[in-house]
Image (cartoon, rainbow, N blue to C red; front, side, top):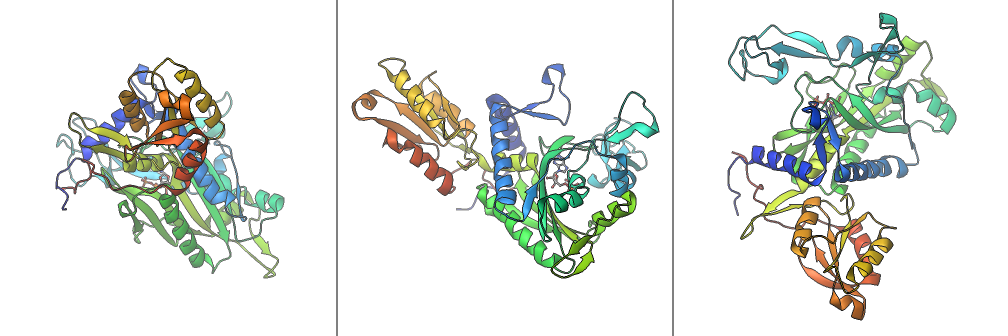
Length: 455
Ligand code: ATP
């Protein structure tokens, strides 16, 4: 059946943003003071979701590869790092201001000669450095300047020799890191898509020059598969290859994975061939030789780097957009977040049908037992129907209800988030049931009012 052609994208983002606030996924930073724009706080459900994404990334990038190790470098680095990396000189975005309404735009993001908001005259283009500057110590002079890191990658590059010397890794090998990065974006927006403080999940893979094209293909393949493991619809993902005008000065080739967000196809993460640029620059600026002696080949070279660089917040937004569905209902629509159980913040909710006849006690016993293996939630408030709806909005795959029959035969009712079917399950079978869903879930065929072709 052909999908109806309407543009429901702004409505979907609005609904998703309000659900995120209502259910405690994501709040605007410092909201009681009017909000700090482009900075976001993850609430009780949001932090679980984001942690699950980070854990899956860490597992798939570090623990599943004997030749990748982790790192957690400081956010504030020596200022020379940012000279060597090219950020002090070149990490700029072109900016224009409207002389009438005073709004500010990225010159490369607007198509018009005049202000896209009010039609007013624009200033000339000025270069604006995106790094947040600060000072270390009590004296604010040029000698004390420091920057909040705009990417986590440099922490990895400057530790290359430390890792080689301490971990006995041999090229090819990788170093992975998850951490905060900061960019003073001129035009942040689209909820958590572009913010000023965000988290990156980066893995830099050091290879022998000449083998870089092989490793580029290898990592492209694995990064795509990561999104499959997250349970993302494959037809909402695509590759974008950087053309000659987009390619960073140090890059030999670069590909981005893009997701079809409600506001359009946009970058999630990049797989880039950074060549030997970074290690050579740090050799030049620090005076420390960052080359590598390859004992097998009996030769010395500066490794090439294949970078996989993903935004944690963008991946969280991808997961939320992919999971959010509204099923048409007779009285009202059912809002449901169809997360893969692997990353769902809560795996199961446990309810007593009513607050008497020993049901709360039995439900709490089940809760205590399940919580040793999974993040589960106990809820005894409101009608069961309302409790189901709350858990649909939290994206919880199972609701487990203790009822009158439980005392007779040690079974409970399990309601499935996706099919809404209810089945009786033996209490002893609950753990294997949840584990099985975590391992084998696939997205069901659904009817979603937002699953429409864009105009
Ligand atoms: P964009 O073109 O969207 O500004 P970029 O190409 O500058 O992004 P990279 O420097 O390659 O991004 O950073 C790697 C990843 O970090 C991006 O793919 C994205 O997921 C994430 N990222 C970058 N900037 C931001 C931001 N301001 N807010 C949230 N995530 C970001």
